Length: 177
Image (cartoon, rainbow, N blue to C red):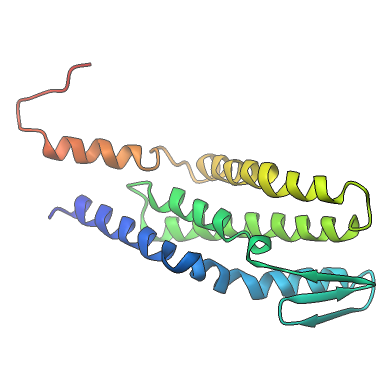
């Protein structure tokens, strides 16, 4: 197996393993920091009490369930970053750290915003809007920022598939365009 094929195999194996067990790796990594960041920022406004994944702020009980942690968003960024061939290890680590930091900051800001508008008539609408629509746009936005800042030139998954097709073609045969 050539170096490129070995790299492809390892990258996709890591993607697969990271997604096993209901994304527990991402929830394990980001639950505690999310709770700590949210409670620290809310403590700037009023006294805060934390019990496990529950934060008491003023008269509000905030339970940060797994959906609040946005593990799927982190996993999608992880997939995008690992499924691009030709990125050296250190650059890939930098892209991952940058992407996760951006997404983490947004997610904490989203939770703080929702807590601050909790008693509003628009809370449910804003909660769903931020959860479904804006979170998806943020993953896309962070990925586009990654492409520009880190000069990523290849396309996730597609570039790997093209390389695999090249490896399986017999010499002298060409694909029709």
